[in-house]
Amino acid sequence: MFDIDAIRGDFPALIHHQQQEVVYLDSAATSQKPQCVIDAICDFYKNGNANVHRGAHRLSQLATKSYEEAREKAAKFINCQAKELVWTKGATEAINLVAYGLTHLLGKNDVILISELEHHANIVPWQQLAKRSGASLRAIPVDSDGIIHTEQALALIEEQKPKVLAISHASNALGNIQPVQTLIKAAKAHNAFTLVDGAQSLLHLRPDVKALDCDFFVFSAHKCLGPTGLGALYGRYQCLEALDVFQTGGEMVTKVSIKQTQFNPPPSKFETGTPNIAGVLGFSAAIDYLNGLESAQLREHELQLFTYLCEQLAQFSEVRILGDMDNNIGTISFVVGGEHPYDLATLMDMEGIALRHGHHCAQPLMSALGVNGTVRVSLAFYNNKADVDAFITALTNTLEMMA
Ligand code: PMP
Image (cartoon, rainbow, N blue to C red; front, top):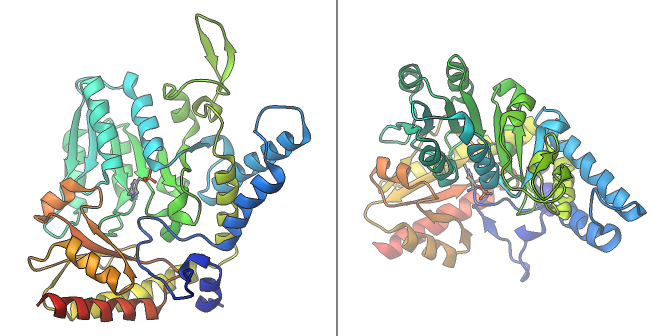
């Protein structure tokens, strides 16, 4: 049985230090962490601290074992093999790793295709790749509500025959779930490399990389109950092999002389320097936590809450809701007349509501929507109806104050 009160009790940050409940509606920025994740990180530093892949001593061996077991667990979570999962410091680094590693495979006749609603992390690394390789960067357009139309996107893929398709599974600014499987299939018909930015989908959609059939999938642990400073890249093994090395140094090598270096095979080829061991163990606990819950029930709860939120928000005639409400991870973005999103968010904070305002690192999307920014409410399974009610009351008060 899905017990929302018990679940909320697992997240200490939902009760702040003065014992008042926090109305946390900013999970798209970062999710809250259950106590077991916090404990796993503390436990490593208290009882198991040692470097991995080095040293014959017991602590190092144990740390290496737990670290590699966590890789296996994370790989299973997204349905790939452990050797196909590279730890990075986040989704941003993972996209940079791929964009850099593909440089030698692209030339001036090639097209890199993204979409207009990408996070800057899935735009700027491709711009840099285009500069380095001479390739062109193009974007699948969105309509005036920020929605990608599959037919239009497919036509663009047919026309451009991209060498790379890089697209988010779900928009961080609007919550829209993208038709990634259909687009990947079309791009693959032209032998494109395909990358899915799963930063927003991992927690809500439990992606299966084999079902998506993408070559690369990236995510950040902190958006899925884990700690900051950690993420991962899934790569189909032969695609990881095809990438050039990104950052270089110790650990990733089999042989170094002053003149040259032999690199390890993936995933080690991409993991140089001392990794975020405590972070990996924290994320491992996050996966255990999620595996202990029924994912369909979490999604059902999120969807019910999201529907309720949409219905409540639709009652405000001055509110313009953006994005695709029918196909959404549980994130809603809106603007109110000429009011500045910053003013709204600040007043809402005074009412105890934590939400996000601004361009959400998606400036091309904001331009396409004709707005400078939005106010964004993003839900996770640990939110409840009282959170939505508190938000609606605060919005009512705020709009009255602004009138
Ligand atoms: N892509 C999307 C869709 C995101 O929402 C984010 C984080 N807001 C990123 C990429 C970048 O993630 P990180 O900052 O954790 O590297």
